[in-house]
Image (cartoon, protein in one colour):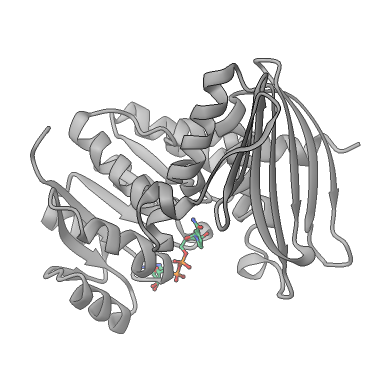
Length: 320
Ligand SMILES: NC(=O)c1ccc[n+]([C@@H]2O[C@H](COP(=O)([O-])OP(=O)(O)OC[C@H]3O[C@@H](n4cnc5c(N)ncnc54)[C@H](O)[C@@H]3O)[C@@H](O)[C@H]2O)c1
């Protein structure tokens, strides 16, 4: 369908929908927002007004039937996601979901199986992968040679209870961004060894993992929700090149022994100061729409996301 407008239906008028996804789609000339569904009428109308969407629904099945879209965004809390995704795939729609892709690896795998069986394109919004500055840094390091070591860190100061009242754990739900980033840097996983701790909470909050990748590279995950505050960084090394990426700060490249040979900010690379754009949210939606137009499977499709959820499981099952 190259060149044709992509007709998208939308489920969910919540925080991420309004902050990053719908503003990005609304900007695209080759996208038509054909319908919006939410069970809370006020949110439905407010969001539909903002993005000039005429067709409004409280029943997503009715919306799909009446609008027959090409694809659908399903932006739900993770424990409400599965049935909606399965129904959409059964209607042979291309599907975009936020992370996490369900609450277990098995849910992700079943969604991947059905997407493939029905010829659907699928995508999980692992937006860190689509950060323009992270991609640029990876290109520079890879130009010098294969990445031989990588690190992903994600720290927070979490004072609340478990996520969604305990429907899902911190690693699967949120620190999964760092887990997926390790795979983005170094590929498929061979071996895992880990330390998982709860640090006084009634749920696990600290995850340290050592990973050997199939290509021989080594990776480290450091994720901890009992720290001084939010930091989220990535590190990649090859012989002669290193990148230190802070998506909220700067990217530092060391080359052939020269420290800070290149320094750039995520905003400079994206050409935009809006977090929605420089932090990968716009670019992931652009990728999904481009993939529909060219009938190409998105990079972070459900099958690929199953591997990330498998790595989450392996971190839990490989404790020292
Ligand atoms: N990529 C990121 O950095 C990032 C950041 C925050 C959240 N997220 C993820 O985004 C997802 C969505 O989070 P959010 O905070 O935007 O959600 P939210 O709770 O603000 O919004 C969900 C919306 O879905 C609606 N809804 C629920 N069930 C429905 C149904 N059956 N039919 C129609 N509407 C229904 C609710 O009324 C609500 O408006 C989560 O999975 C979360 O993990 C990602």
